[in-house]
Image 1: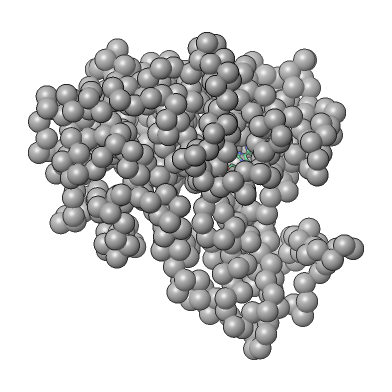
Image 2: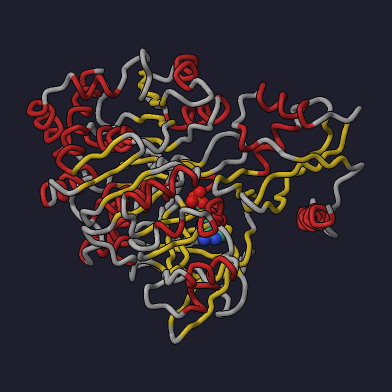
Amino acid sequence: MSSTDGLVRYPADVAARYRAAGAWGTRSLAAEFRAVAERVPEREAVVAPDGRLTYRELDERADRLALGLTELGLRPGGRVVLQIGNRLMSVVAWYGLLKAGLVPICSLPAHREHEISGVNRKTGAVAHLVEAGGRFDLVEFALQQRIGVPLTIGAADGPNRLEDLVDRSDPGVARAVVDRIQARIHPDEVAVFQLSGGTTGVPKVIPRLHAEYWYNARAYAEASGWDETTRNGHLIPVIHNAGIVCGVHAPHSVGGCTLLTSPVLDEALPMLAAERVTDVLFGHGHYGAVGHPVFTQLVPSLRRVVLSGAKVPLPLFEALEGHGLWSGQLFGMGEGFFALSGSGAPREARLTTVGTPISALDEFRVLDPSSEKELPDGEVGELACRGPYTLRGYFDAPDVNAVAFTSDGFYRTGDLVAVRTFGGERAISVEGRIKDVINRGGEKISAEEVEVLLLRHPGIREAAIVAMPDERLGERSCAYLVPSGGRLTLPDLQEHLAGLGVAKFKWPERLEWVSSLPKTAVGKLDKKLLHRQIAAKLSEE
Ligand code: AMP
């Protein structure tokens, strides 16, 4: 496991085994996409609110974009920060960057200076791609950030509009340039950087490699029983791990279509109905979809509903059954490992567990959180996993890696799970977590990161961020604070965090002032108690 370039590689014998088993291919992501595009050129590859493209069209546009990017001086291996949403050009941009040999970094449109500068410090990006048209002016933001070459989507007069780069490139020249670039890419090189929340403003960077990342998607498509007729609806942010794996690569690995839509149900559901959606992934923020008046219009074409992000309430499950729909659960992470309800899994397993690993080559253990001791089935412990698409180390993070993996390379997820057995199948039940994060509608907030930022305010002596339950988002963050003078208001704190350039979704949404923070018997901050307190207080209110 050499790590001279910040990358912890899979051991050579393990990589050879994954390849011999047919999991890992020998092509880059862009070459894998091209192979499918050549097989089904006239099939629809993507439908978005702003247009639709067949495989042939998407492949050609992405080639032309790659040429345009190359002509801007961007060279293979360069890293590009992405802040773009669910639109047609985002998919063109994704494949265009890959075709140019560039490495997309999956930042969010919601990220601000604090996050983007942290990402840039860690990765040394050469370009920054943003979209225009949101409430916040990302184009202006990109110009201020000065991260290499600014690139824009949807801007009337922004710099380096991707639309122009596509338009002015000759398809034949573009294809030759892309072929030359792709021929030099090794399938075990870094293709994409996904992000995971860090504690100090510098994110943990997850390297995803060409062969293993495509396999992740192929395994998801296979476990879902997908083929060319699949029309998969995706409402959650596309430039995210679930977005890329489930929303883009997986349908494309089988020649299916991705229906990329808005997170707003009033916009998404009519589009999915009109486009004859066959499969859909609902994050916790969309669990209300089944009660939406338009939902019944999806039912005739819908085959599978996959729920992810939080425990599935029985009434939701029953409502889907009432429509005659199969439903199941997905558990996944940017670091790799996915579990999914098996198509033939019994009802109880689909209702109460997140299913089984999507690849026969996946390995998982349930560990005592303070050691490497494995716990018997049924007992709650920390999920640790290893396999053909699970990382072997964060990028350039030896200190984090020293504690995030077992001595034999299993990634310690920080999630608490138990194994439940159904007719010989060992399914995973999510029971909680030991990592200190808030899961706000799928976006993870590192409590420690926000606490450190709050403590930079002179009016705060101690701070503890805890999750408070929320009907729509699953969790929101609440700050327990010990003042060092007069009490600040929520707007004061928000102004403080805005001043530090912190993404809004990380801002606490409630304050609780206390004279001291509770400690456990061993003198550690007792967050479990705070969590119980705020949950009780909210249910009283
Ligand atoms: P991300 O890398 O942002 O996709 O986040 C991965 C984390 O999200 C996991 O480690 C879990 O903590 C959480 N997660 C993902 N899927 C589920 C699920 N179905 N139920 C509960 N938590 C989940």
